[in-house]
Length: 579
Ligand code: PEP
Ligand code: MG
Image (tube, rainbow, N blue to C red):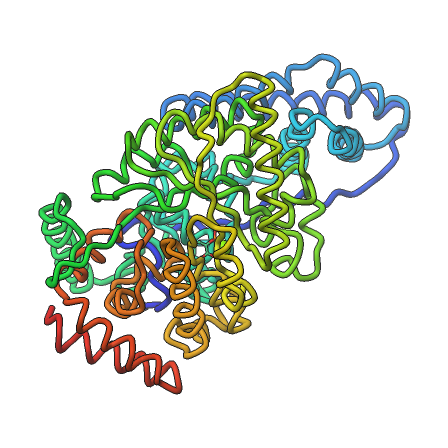
């Protein structure tokens, strides 16, 4: 038995069997030539591999129909159709006979050729098929090479996934009904994998560094997503402790249910707004169970990141409408795509080759460089805006020029909707995300062009302290109470108030109840977070007075180090909010 300690990123306590997930690479192949008399047996070997891949796929598809969403099941149905395509099979046979090369080479060459052609197509639907070709050819190759590999989408038993790192797209497509917990070597609280784990309510501990080395397949694990601990092969005493912690956790959840309908108001009558962050339209309805007063951040890029989905205007419009309708009259803030960084779009692999993706072609930079793609999204949002209460927000604004350019494209998108006679809310509010130091420093200037601000602390902390948010080695430096961060927050909130607009926060810090009092004291109007965190934050808001929070913030702003400030905030909490 051993216990590993990491970063708790998604609460809940679970136990189950470990499933070690090793990223599936395109397999290495050996090239060799065939004699004429080897051609027929090689063709038979190829046909058998295709038939076996097909048999596997059919089983996976049937399971997907039972256990996954229709969209996910449809991906496998499309793969079956591709494997059945006689043209594809004829091409493979033809190439093998013509080149006298082994089946692995033929499959790999044909697949690469097809993928290259597809990736160069201007049609996004066609470009997307490249991912599918990659997938089915890998399946045939794995059969030929006798490699047994189970993808996360194919899981057929309950497991705790143990990985070095997971891409957001892998989390998105895994069979979530079978993944009971996530344990990872890399990642931190604000990494996108963590954000998705919270969205799907899967207990997760990340940043463990050595989990994949210390855990073997089928080890029994207890994942404590509250304390950030993973116990490997627990003894009886530990299992009992786990059950006790789980009962306590559930009791606390019941207490939170009791305050769901109550307002987020301090003891001296100051009201703030608590909203939820979502990544997928399906989450919209469930955030209401946690008492969300709207959606403060809809990360729309996840629509584009799901393999097999083309983010066409109509499909986007449907997704936005679904969210807006689920929320009724409550406000929904849709953030335009934040592609890049760790969120790589299958259609735009070029972003994957940057040396410094976090400083590169991401978010609003990507949208402004592809104005047609951007305006497609804006039109979809505008069209959906008549169905409820919608706001638009631009990510990673670093200066007024970007905000002005984005607004100009919004004007164009409105004109296009008008020309098509599609109604929209003309007075739709537009906000800038403040997540780059230059934006915080010029918040007074940006306020002139914004109807609201939303502070993205995940990036603001990353960029102001030069700490990669997904790198567990430097995570200890990502301290929200660092004087630089507090000053940026104060400048942003003050600039918003001076202009008479609201200051919101949608970074993970907004859901960290250990700093809620400090954020209240700094003047934050709106907190948007993973829905699970809303009751925790509300409990704090309802237990403190704004007057005392302001004093705390004043003190913290005088602090000279994050340690000093963290100690101050902790001591304040113990004094003012006994557990
Ligand atoms: C942030 O940076 O705080 C934010 C909310 O955006 P994201 O986490 O999607 O980068
Ligand atoms: Mg961000």
